[in-house]
Amino acid sequence: MLSHLPKLGVGLGFRPQFKSDLFLNRQQVDFLEIVAEHYLDAPPEKQEELELLAAHFPIIPHAINLSLGSAEGLDIDYLRKLAALIQQLNPPWWSEHICFTKAGGIDIGHLSPLPYTQEAVEVLCQNISEVRRWIDIPLILENITYMVQLPDAEMTEAQFLSEVLERSDCGLLLDITNLYTNAVNYGYDIQNFLQELPWERIVQLHFVGGHWHDGILIDSHSQSTPVEVWELMNQVLSCASVKGIVLERDENLPTFTELIGELQQAREIVRSHGKWDY
Ligand SMILES: [Fe+2]
Image (cartoon, rainbow, N blue to C red):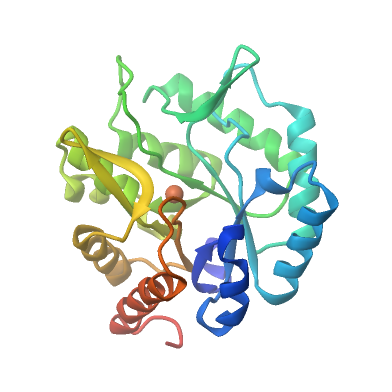
């Protein structure tokens, strides 16, 4: 099923700050990713913004607060609203993270890591099958960064991600910056990690740069993409049939020309591997 998804190209995570520049440079951006939560219970001007974006670009909704890893189950009211938004946009796929953001009825306000256990796999799969009752558009799942590693792991992070993807039959949104950030902060081998992933499930990539603080790499989406992440993109694109690549810059926004330059650099890598029609 994943192999039939359309190729969207190289796109941008939409931020309202660059809306006018985006429309002035529309040919340079193949598609947009929107944060779904920005358009749930949205005032009319946000709804109009979404309609305008959707009239000019393919849109991929990216959800951040569904909390697929919550053992208590999903917030059905939230799920109903998310399903309505996704139905309205009718995208080829949509995405969420492998994490939890709610526990005991409290919104943590942060993408929190799960323990790499069979029990957590079961919880994720159960919640994902509930999501499928509401949303029948393909779901792809993203790997997150974390500042803590939970104890009592029964498998590696890569094995955990793979098991969730296989069991739930979801695609992978591989955030190569998150992968690089975790590898640097926890001293693990990226190549070992990549070897354990189901490459045929990679649908989309995220990339951006973070900043260093006291020897820790912070996933702040605030810097241009570092050379190590470009190399990682090159490696992944040499083997995986990726359908879309998104630059997700949030903080310290540079000129739009600089953003477009990064998209162009990603396209060059795609082209060097003879992918798509670039
Ligand atoms: Fe990401």
